[in-house]
Length: 497
Ligand code: UTP
Ligand code: MN
Image 1 (cartoon, helix red, strand yellow):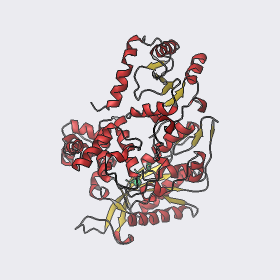
Image 2: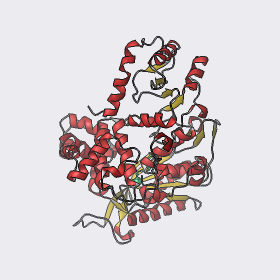
Image 3: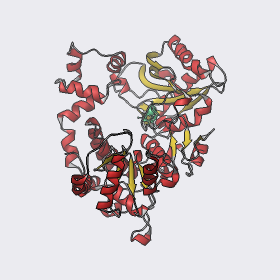
Image 4: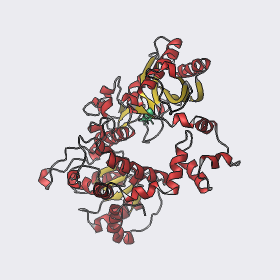
């Protein structure tokens, strides 16, 4: 019911073939799910190739769903193939390899899925004018756009965010990502969109997003969004997940038990709140209020002092939204490390100790490093990194903040609680950690998608790996990483995708 029309179109198109395809014999390659694109290839050849692959132990999917890992096409011009793929908007294309038939034939010859090398990749080039449309000036990748904090299209992006969030609550990844991508494209525009015609050349806007935009343009609001905002389940999940330590799964579990408010949760004796959730409730008022730039600056001084007391060589960098120039954030993110390789391991516990002694640590969840070079590179996109880190709630005194605290009216206390994250990568991975923690989330997602889809490289918070050369590419600065990727450098304040 939440699927897009585009997806059902794909399903319909492939149904006649489904009937003729024999079921799998013995599956040898569980991780590889091939989809053969019928256009140009033709139905009977597709059917033949499907049988061939199946007989060799491959899984061939009849339907283009987000289970598919390898999309194989024959004789399709790259531009029109990609255009067609993108019409299937909810699909998670970044997780798929889009490949020429030569990958398939080589794999058949070898009797196993051969490694994906650059020569097999069908590059995602924008359609050329020779094919009847003009090239789009806005890239589909956030890492090729410059997005400041000034969003001229909040009427649309706020609506998209509600829809995306609801898909997230329902664990429907495709449309969730589609709305986030669409929002990200609109955020990069220098002006407000005034009519749907202006979106004609923009990437990542599907039928559903355009329908929402049209409603907003005509009625000033989207009825789908309005309905959600007054929907009990959406409201409850939104409320519960606003507590530090409560994720969508827990929120949903409690919702299904009939709980609707914080007092319902706190009164339910069968619920055991963990330490994080208890602190989340205890400081709810404070940590659900935005943190100001002045507050972030003051925290920077405090952490800097604590780090320098341990080693004068300590390196501290503000990351997250504040590094991107945001005026307010939900927390403050820092990288703290030392130039001496290996000694960063003990740095964080010592800093935590120092903060404790000052009596300003209200909560601390420390996670030691599980970083292991042998595990690199990671294929997972949203995977947490393995560096030592801690999620804190700190007590911030008003007297230390220039212009005072961002407090609720009538709050007579001289302090507030603030969420702070510290991460501590070894120095030789510093640039990757800095790039990863600066965000935005959408910018990071698209950097990874670009690296993989356009360059045959794998990027994460730890490293950059060139799959064709089978080697890691070292970097000392963020500029180095952009250069390896063949991207123009995008300044942190232009990464608010
Ligand atoms: P945040 O969630 O703090 O977002 O993560 P933000 O952009 O600073 O926004 P506000 O202002 O706090 O709401 C900051 C960056 O750190 C990365 C995220 O992907 C994001 O880009 N991050 C966070 C990681 O890479 N790993 C983590 O474990 C946590
Ligand atoms: Mn942050």
